[in-house]
Length: 167
Image 1 (cartoon, helix red, strand yellow):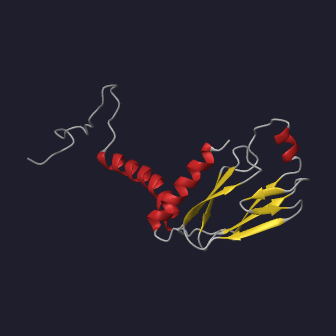
Image 2 (cartoon, rainbow, N blue to C red):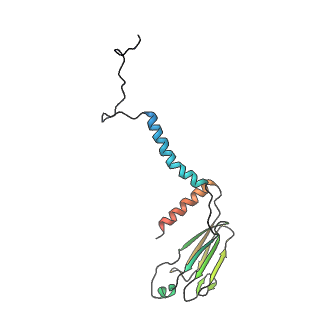
Image 3 (cartoon, rainbow, N blue to C red):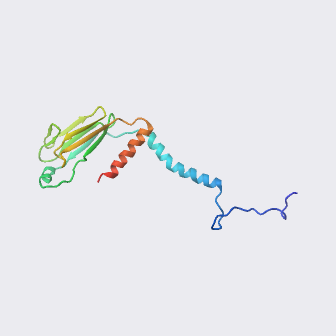
């Protein structure tokens, strides 16, 4: 039998519970592909993008009046308790004493206005006595440079999470 206008079936689309036409599989697949691309594209870019900084030095300054505030009983941290560096990318720690009194960093006495540069050449975890800290200690964590895409992504995620946890 040849279909004609008189005996042709109407174009019927499946309907959902509300009586609206259900989305087609092609449309759902397209929406899923767009959502997956929106999520995974930034992840892939973050994994592939090389880790770079403008300078190999990480500068931390001991502000003027730090010792006076410490002697007055203030416990606020001026410097972070942990400093993270990367071998070969950002591996030079610079401390500048802008305070009016000398400060100790490890075995080194930093006079007012003096800057100390410490290069790190291998991954390590270093503990220094530091008079600018309320706890009296500073930890310098030197990590290997992330060279593989997934290690770069992991490094970026850890860095982001550290930034969220700091006050």
